[in-house]
Image (cartoon, rainbow, N blue to C red; front, side, top):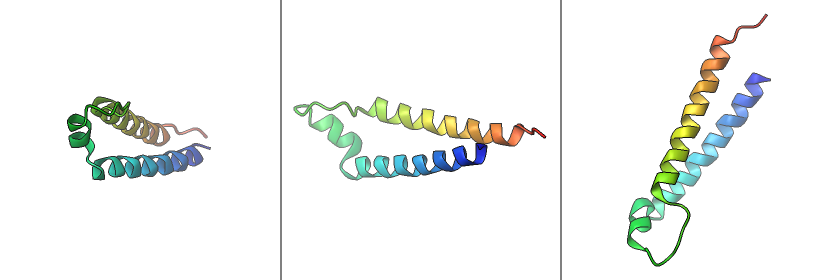
Length: 71
């Protein structure tokens, strides 16, 4: 079951990287700072904190799967 969760998490991470790539390709930080007339909830601190928390969670899950050795 742990491996199934890991595979699901990796698929989700790939989709997240795709979304981050699209955001960056459409201007990313530059677009968020230059166009203040269009309100958006996708502010840079939210984007990067979400990325860091997701990466930390994935790393912790991998460490858990390695350390947890139940018979």
